[in-house]
Amino acid sequence: LINRGGLPMRVFTPEVTDELIEKMGFISSAKEMTKFEYYNGICERISTNVHLMLCCSRNSFDAIVSEFPNFLRYCIVDHYGEWSYEDKFDIATAQLQRCTALNEDHIPLFCEQIMKVHSFMPNFGINSTPSSFLSFIKTFSFLLKRRV
Image (cartoon, rainbow, N blue to C red; front, top):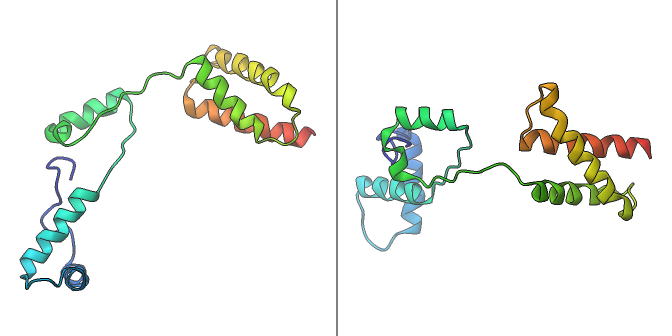
């Protein structure tokens, strides 16, 4: 699928193929079709409607492209950069607004503290990633709920 942009020849067992063809017969009973034409129609629909999303590091992406040279021909690549301070602040605000234990006036103050603590994480050998940021906010909210 990744290398050719289409389905492998025998992706379905004969039983599954027969079941799909039977169901397709009910959908497109306008004209007589051979089993091969039904199968090609199924594969075409799947290829048209399958959407995959891969999230990987730059090194992993390079390895995938090296292993599957046609990969770039059949996909759209979006490179995501680091989250800005404002984005992180907005995310922290949105997450803390869900916490009913907080006074609305305190949310910006807590967000500032979250931002400061998270910015120091690399100093302690902890990777600063979007996942770690979200995890930190979740932990902070949990502890805040337990405290109140």
